[in-house]
Amino acid sequence: MDLKEIQNLIKFVAKSGASEVKLETGDVKITIRTGSDEKETTIVQQMPQQMPQQMPAQQSQQQQAPAPQESAAPQKESKDSGEDDSKYITVKSPIIGTFYRKPSPDKPSFVETGDSVKEGDVLCVIEAMKLFNEIESEVSGKIVKVLVDDASPVEFDQPLFLVDPS
Image 1: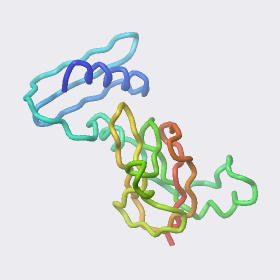
Image 2: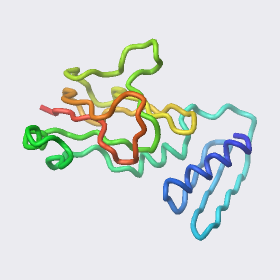
Image 3: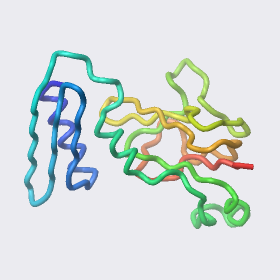
Image 4: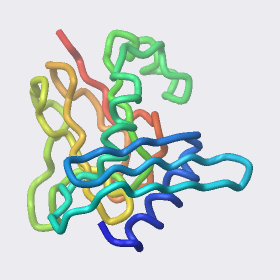
């Protein structure tokens, strides 16, 4: 992890609103605290190794993010589908970034409306700071609706998919 990546990580954490993020891998330990215009970064040890593709800070944010849960009838949905949506589970974005339905432009989408998915299946990727984070299903069921257009920006906790668990 070079200085530029660390600076980008600091900016990302500052924008996310988190007050403190601790990042620990086998060869790197970083603590980032934000608040009152103060940013602190401590690198304890660094070995010349490749970092995993997914940024550990984003993994910790994913772990802190609430798991997909049953949604109340979404208020932003059209009135004709609002009542039916309450039985579906909403898969939400665990991070801020750009939503992609495909692993690359020349490949097919991970999932389509009507596809059956099981726990652990990749539903989409979200790009954040030039890293592509696979978003996996935490429930088994059938994709009822894709709520976000391909290559659209998404916010933390924004609904991405509706899944029928039955």
